[in-house]
Amino acid sequence: MRVTTLGTGTSQGVPVIACDCEVCLSLDYHDKRTRTSIHIETEGKSFIIDTGPDFRNQVLRERIKQLDAIIFTHEHKDHTAGLDDVRAFNFRQQKDMPIYAKHNVIEQLKQEFSYAFGEKKYPGVPQIKVYEIDNSPFEVEGVLFTPIQVMHLKLPVFGFRVKDFSYITDANYISEEEKEKVKGSKVLVLNALQKETHISHFNLEQAIALAEEIGAEQTYFTHISHRMGLHKEVKTELPDNMHLAHDGLTIEM
Image (cartoon, rainbow, N blue to C red; front, side, top):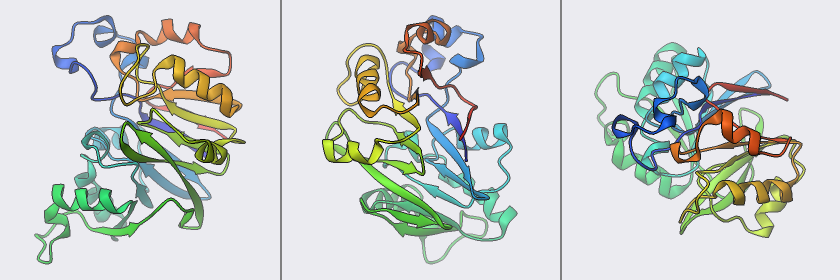
């Protein structure tokens, strides 16, 4: 199994175009954080979780030529805005793109990309096949996904576990029951927005505490704001088995 962090950043905070902080001006590629998404390759299948505004560039950068399905965590724009670009995979693979999401996420996608869901479709629009999921395990191309329901302030968001890998983004609370789904994971990717507390995301201290409780062999922090600080400096502050993820990081399991 191979996991690539396509993007590890966030739309939270001051846009890069207007920011002159040391992270936004950094020439270190570890500090170039596009919106959060991951690519999972297992059993000859290829999946992406979330299609943010940077989806097209991420796929081109990583040279992803096959995509069997897209799974969505929630409906916020920084996790859905790139869905239109699945049309390239429609053309290459000559089939509809399966997407898996909760009911409210599907409804939001239908509003944002109404032209892809209409009865009379203009030639060349994204071809999408929708599968509605709930907080129960489901299979995609024979691969089992287990949803992990977390809270993003008052919004329920799905993380996912695939085999010994768990992925949680946009969260600031996870119940004891849902934590049990994550325990036993060898690798955990978990959101950590910044060092200061935040209303709807774990900060670094909270993320470290949760990672210690989960007890994965390795934990990588994602959905990182520029307010976190420079990658090379923050990584020295972390426990030995915890790391800041970066765009293009590949994890082999």
